[in-house]
Image (cartoon, rainbow over all chains, first blue to last red; front, side):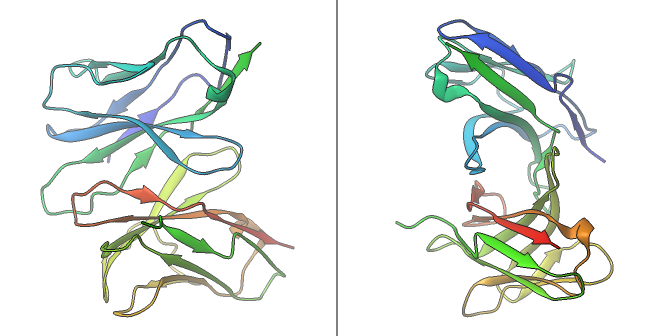
Length: 117
Length: 113
C-alpha cells in the first residue's frame, strides 16, 4: 500500500522569507501523481501544485515550486516570498495513475505553517 | 460554473442517531470520492462512486456506513447509529472521469454528542 509521510508537524517562517516543507512517500508504482494541498482555517482543500512522476522537470506555480526526487521518493514544497495568507495546513498527497484501479488520493498527516509578520 | 457543494456544512447528532451527508458534484462530473478527516489528521479515503455504482469501498468501515450515487440527485454518505468516534470532517471530491482531477467540496463537519 502507498504511504505518504510528512515529518514536520509544524513550521514557521517570517513574512517575505522562503520555507520548504518536506514529504516522502512509498510506492511500488512507476506512474503516479504527487500533489500539495493547502487547507486554511475555512477547511476548504485548495490544490497548490501537481507533479506527474514521468516528468523530470519540477513543477512551479508562481511562488510555489517543488523539488521532486523520484529515486529518493521525496517531494518537497518551497514557498518563496511568504505571505500572511500562506498560513495554513499543507498536505502532501499521492495518487496512482491508470492501472484500472481506484485513483484515490493518499494524504500525509499535514504540516501546519505559521507566517510571522 | 458552481463548484462541488456539500450540505449541511455542520451537522450535530446524538449518539445512536443517523447522519446523512450530501454531495452535489460539479456539473458534468460523474465520479465522486468521499474522504474523512479526523482531528489533527490528514484526509483518508472512504469510497469511490460512479453514477449508480460503487467502484471502490475499501476505506469504508464495515458496519454502519453506506454510500450511494443515484442516477439523479446528489451522492449520499449515510452513517447509522453514530458514535462519538464518527465526529470528523467529511469531504467529497468530484471528477469528470476516472483519472481526472479531483475538485473538493467545503466539507461537512459532523459532531456527535
